[in-house]
Image (cartoon, rainbow, N blue to C red):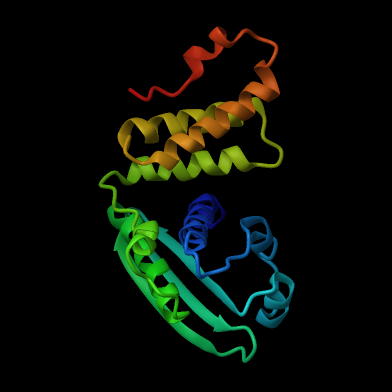
Length: 204
Protein backbone atom coordinates (compact mmCIF):
# COMPACT_ATOMS: atom_id res chain seq x y z
CA UNK A 1 0.00 0.00 0.00
CA UNK A 2 1.31 3.42 -0.97
CA UNK A 3 0.14 4.96 2.30
CA UNK A 4 2.62 2.67 4.11
CA UNK A 5 5.45 3.53 1.71
CA UNK A 6 7.06 5.90 4.21
CA UNK A 7 7.28 3.00 6.67
CA UNK A 8 8.90 0.47 4.32
CA UNK A 9 11.29 3.11 2.94
CA UNK A 10 12.24 4.13 6.46
CA UNK A 11 12.96 0.58 7.57
CA UNK A 12 14.99 -0.04 4.41
CA UNK A 13 17.08 3.05 5.04
CA UNK A 14 17.67 2.10 8.67
CA UNK A 15 18.97 -1.31 7.56
CA UNK A 16 21.27 0.33 5.02
CA UNK A 17 22.59 2.63 7.72
CA UNK A 18 23.22 -0.26 10.11
CA UNK A 19 25.12 -2.28 7.51
CA UNK A 20 27.13 0.71 6.28
CA UNK A 21 28.59 1.16 9.76
CA UNK A 22 30.55 -2.10 9.43
CA UNK A 23 34.14 -1.53 8.38
CA UNK A 24 34.44 -4.76 6.34
CA UNK A 25 31.27 -4.20 4.35
CA UNK A 26 30.79 -1.83 1.43
CA UNK A 27 27.16 -0.78 1.03
CA UNK A 28 25.76 1.13 -1.93
CA UNK A 29 24.51 4.59 -1.02
CA UNK A 30 20.83 5.18 -0.34
CA UNK A 31 20.34 7.30 -3.47
CA UNK A 32 21.87 4.61 -5.69
CA UNK A 33 19.95 1.77 -4.05
CA UNK A 34 16.60 3.55 -4.10
CA UNK A 35 16.99 4.42 -7.79
CA UNK A 36 15.86 0.86 -8.59
CA UNK A 37 12.78 1.04 -6.41
CA UNK A 38 9.64 -0.06 -8.22
CA UNK A 39 11.55 -0.96 -11.40
CA UNK A 40 11.59 -4.36 -13.09
CA UNK A 41 15.36 -4.82 -13.24
CA UNK A 42 17.14 -8.16 -12.84
CA UNK A 43 19.58 -8.71 -9.98
CA UNK A 44 22.61 -9.03 -12.26
CA UNK A 45 21.96 -5.61 -13.79
CA UNK A 46 21.42 -4.00 -10.38
CA UNK A 47 24.62 -5.55 -9.04
CA UNK A 48 26.63 -4.41 -12.05
CA UNK A 49 25.40 -0.83 -11.85
CA UNK A 50 25.96 -0.67 -8.09
CA UNK A 51 29.28 -2.54 -8.36
CA UNK A 52 28.36 -5.02 -5.61
CA UNK A 53 28.79 -8.76 -5.17
CA UNK A 54 25.47 -9.40 -3.47
CA UNK A 55 22.04 -7.79 -3.48
CA UNK A 56 19.71 -7.60 -0.48
CA UNK A 57 16.05 -7.34 -1.39
CA UNK A 58 12.84 -7.83 0.48
CA UNK A 59 9.52 -6.46 1.61
CA UNK A 60 8.00 -4.77 4.64
CA UNK A 61 4.36 -5.25 5.57
CA UNK A 62 2.63 -3.68 8.50
CA UNK A 63 -0.76 -4.44 10.03
CA UNK A 64 -1.50 -2.31 13.07
CA UNK A 65 1.36 -2.81 15.52
CA UNK A 66 2.62 -5.97 13.80
CA UNK A 67 5.31 -5.86 11.14
CA UNK A 68 6.60 -8.57 8.80
CA UNK A 69 9.98 -8.17 7.13
CA UNK A 70 11.05 -10.63 4.45
CA UNK A 71 14.66 -10.40 3.28
CA UNK A 72 16.62 -12.25 0.62
CA UNK A 73 20.36 -12.09 0.05
CA UNK A 74 21.25 -12.94 -3.54
CA UNK A 75 24.61 -13.77 -5.11
CA UNK A 76 25.08 -11.24 -7.90
CA UNK A 77 27.13 -13.63 -10.07
CA UNK A 78 25.07 -16.81 -9.87
CA UNK A 79 21.70 -15.24 -9.16
CA UNK A 80 21.09 -17.85 -6.46
CA UNK A 81 19.85 -17.13 -2.96
CA UNK A 82 22.54 -17.03 -0.31
CA UNK A 83 20.03 -16.67 2.48
CA UNK A 84 16.43 -15.68 3.12
CA UNK A 85 14.36 -15.13 6.23
CA UNK A 86 10.94 -13.84 7.31
CA UNK A 87 10.57 -11.97 10.58
CA UNK A 88 7.26 -11.34 12.32
CA UNK A 89 7.50 -8.95 15.25
CA UNK A 90 5.56 -6.42 17.24
CA UNK A 91 6.31 -2.84 16.29
CA UNK A 92 7.62 -2.23 19.81
CA UNK A 93 10.58 -4.47 18.87
CA UNK A 94 11.27 -2.85 15.51
CA UNK A 95 14.71 -1.48 16.34
CA UNK A 96 15.85 -4.82 17.74
CA UNK A 97 14.46 -6.47 14.60
CA UNK A 98 16.49 -4.16 12.38
CA UNK A 99 19.62 -5.05 14.34
CA UNK A 100 18.82 -8.77 14.03
CA UNK A 101 18.41 -8.51 10.25
CA UNK A 102 21.61 -6.49 9.84
CA UNK A 103 23.54 -8.95 12.02
CA UNK A 104 22.24 -11.94 10.05
CA UNK A 105 23.15 -10.35 6.71
CA UNK A 106 26.64 -9.51 7.93
CA UNK A 107 27.21 -13.06 9.13
CA UNK A 108 25.98 -14.54 5.85
CA UNK A 109 28.51 -12.35 4.07
CA UNK A 110 31.14 -13.61 6.52
CA UNK A 111 31.79 -10.18 7.96
CA UNK A 112 33.57 -10.51 11.28
CA UNK A 113 31.47 -9.04 14.07
CA UNK A 114 33.38 -8.43 17.28
CA UNK A 115 33.46 -5.77 19.95
CA UNK A 116 32.58 -2.32 18.69
CA UNK A 117 31.48 -3.75 15.33
CA UNK A 118 28.52 -5.46 16.99
CA UNK A 119 27.72 -2.29 18.92
CA UNK A 120 27.44 -0.36 15.66
CA UNK A 121 24.33 -2.27 14.65
CA UNK A 122 22.83 -2.92 18.09
CA UNK A 123 20.28 -0.15 18.22
CA UNK A 124 18.25 -1.33 21.18
CA UNK A 125 14.44 -1.14 21.21
CA UNK A 126 11.56 1.18 21.70
CA UNK A 127 8.31 0.59 23.55
CA UNK A 128 6.60 3.44 21.73
CA UNK A 129 5.59 2.39 18.19
CA UNK A 130 3.70 5.65 17.62
CA UNK A 131 6.87 7.63 18.26
CA UNK A 132 8.91 5.51 15.86
CA UNK A 133 6.18 5.82 13.26
CA UNK A 134 6.31 9.59 13.69
CA UNK A 135 10.08 9.49 13.13
CA UNK A 136 9.64 7.63 9.83
CA UNK A 137 6.90 10.05 8.73
CA UNK A 138 9.20 12.96 9.52
CA UNK A 139 11.94 11.42 7.40
CA UNK A 140 9.64 10.98 4.43
CA UNK A 141 8.28 14.53 4.58
CA UNK A 142 11.79 15.92 4.96
CA UNK A 143 13.05 14.09 1.86
CA UNK A 144 10.21 14.86 -0.53
CA UNK A 145 11.63 16.36 -3.71
CA UNK A 146 8.79 18.89 -3.89
CA UNK A 147 8.52 19.66 -0.17
CA UNK A 148 6.54 22.77 0.68
CA UNK A 149 6.49 24.79 3.87
CA UNK A 150 3.51 22.77 5.14
CA UNK A 151 5.47 19.52 4.62
CA UNK A 152 8.41 20.84 6.60
CA UNK A 153 6.16 21.97 9.40
CA UNK A 154 4.51 18.52 9.53
CA UNK A 155 7.97 16.94 9.51
CA UNK A 156 9.08 19.10 12.43
CA UNK A 157 5.92 18.24 14.35
CA UNK A 158 6.52 14.53 13.74
CA UNK A 159 10.16 14.74 14.88
CA UNK A 160 9.14 16.79 17.89
CA UNK A 161 6.69 14.09 18.98
CA UNK A 162 9.28 11.35 18.42
CA UNK A 163 12.02 13.22 20.29
CA UNK A 164 9.78 13.93 23.26
CA UNK A 165 8.76 10.27 23.41
CA UNK A 166 12.19 8.67 22.82
CA UNK A 167 14.78 11.31 23.82
CA UNK A 168 17.60 8.73 23.96
CA UNK A 169 17.57 8.10 20.20
CA UNK A 170 20.11 10.56 18.91
CA UNK A 171 19.25 10.14 15.26
CA UNK A 172 15.73 11.46 15.93
CA UNK A 173 17.29 14.73 17.03
CA UNK A 174 19.54 14.71 13.97
CA UNK A 175 16.50 14.28 11.76
CA UNK A 176 14.73 17.16 13.46
CA UNK A 177 17.79 19.39 13.08
CA UNK A 178 18.03 18.53 9.38
CA UNK A 179 14.41 19.52 8.83
CA UNK A 180 14.84 22.74 10.79
CA UNK A 181 17.83 23.63 8.60
CA UNK A 182 15.77 23.01 5.45
CA UNK A 183 12.91 25.14 6.77
CA UNK A 184 15.30 27.93 7.74
CA UNK A 185 17.03 28.13 4.35
CA UNK A 186 13.81 27.78 2.39
CA UNK A 187 11.63 30.24 4.28
CA UNK A 188 13.24 32.03 7.19
CA UNK A 189 16.89 32.82 6.42
CA UNK A 190 16.19 36.54 6.31
CA UNK A 191 14.63 36.54 9.78
CA UNK A 192 16.76 37.09 12.85
CA UNK A 193 17.79 33.84 14.61
CA UNK A 194 15.88 34.56 17.82
CA UNK A 195 12.63 34.48 15.83
CA UNK A 196 13.22 30.76 15.12
CA UNK A 197 13.58 29.65 18.73
CA UNK A 198 9.90 28.82 19.08
CA UNK A 199 10.15 26.42 16.13
CA UNK A 200 13.02 24.41 17.60
CA UNK A 201 12.17 20.91 18.91
CA UNK A 202 12.08 20.80 22.70
CA UNK A 203 15.03 18.67 23.71
CA UNK A 204 14.51 19.15 27.41
